[in-house]
Length: 130
Image (cartoon, rainbow, N blue to C red; front, side, top):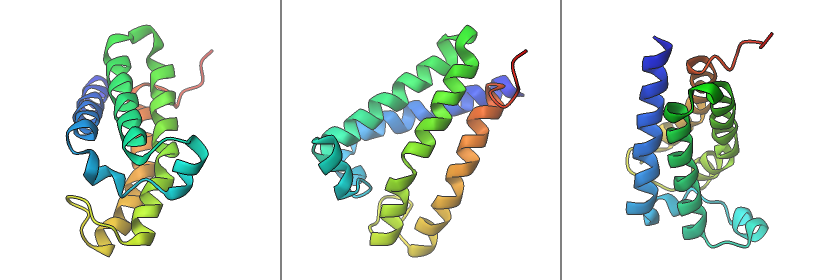
């Protein structure tokens, strides 16, 4: 069951990662202005960077079985790191495909903790190593 969940997560990350390159404009609305100031990157570069990270995490979840827990923790950390973008999108009321109402944008905020838990559970990252 965990292997299936890990593969599903990896496939989802890969698909979203690709979308960050093919639909960059749609993802730019999620990037807060402060992220541009802090990183000194433009919004397109931030979107492409996050897509790259998603693709790398996807590959790590599948291709690095000995580093499964580390990949799970890195994926969970990524989900935490992008939460401010989700909050920004909700607060500014900007739409993206599938997130075109205030209720959907607000509901998306509650998906983020579930993604963190999914990444940890699917990789046994939630268990203490002995």
